[in-house]
Image (tube, rainbow, N blue to C red; front, side, top):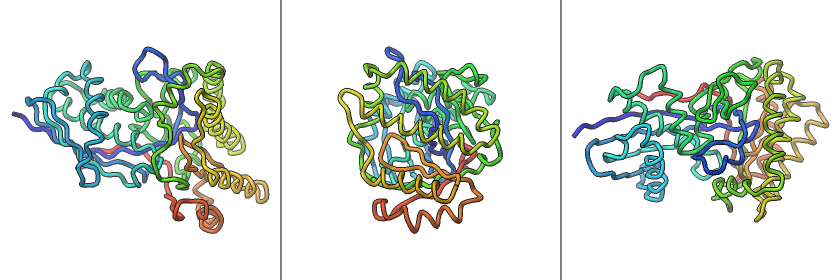
Length: 343
């Protein structure tokens, strides 16, 4: 019996143009393209030990404690990637994983977690001679996508593009690609995550994605997202923060408007989400700061601002925004370089 061990650290990411909706009758294929900032501090570190040749068995330890609730999702993931690497269904797994951020705090732990696991599996495939280095990260992105769509983008930094788009050369529905044709202001752009609600969401992202299939505004939304990808490209190149703010905030609110107009409808924002948004708007109106927000599929607010404004922006967080956070909790992060193999 052969034993393999691999360890990877992979970050979360926050989409600027949102992915919300999958193509029906296909596995994890997006209905529109998306682009995200890769975070730096919010990451999952995973060590995978794999004993080949035994009956499929999976054990998951989160923060040192056995977590059997993760096993069905991991087994489903392994079944999905088996056509690519058949060996994955023939062995015993110990997955030891830790997050640098609170689990279930709405910071896309599935993106960081599934991408880290995918990278570990690619290490094993490489050691077995089934994968060569030039294809390593692209293959990892393919595998990660089959676990969590947004995980495909977490493999890369400083930004990731997922979904075929005519204006992004090399883009694909099967995997994400790194994107770095950006103004220096975005290389270390800050994202302070304001934790309005740390608990489990009332409606999962999987359910939300499925509801878009019969949404009355679905086709227009997919067209809008593709158009916003086109608009965002020169904005990222030029560093035009006014245009960046308008597009990114509109995308965030569009995402939540889709939830509120689906059937059945639902709301993931909380009253304090809106209070934070209004406070950011008021600050921008009064002082002309180039600060904005975006939202993931949850109540927490990603507060975005240039690195040069960090001291002033964090003073604003401490004095005005953290009162709206659960127990005053927030996480300081910034754009990072993507996944890394751990020694």
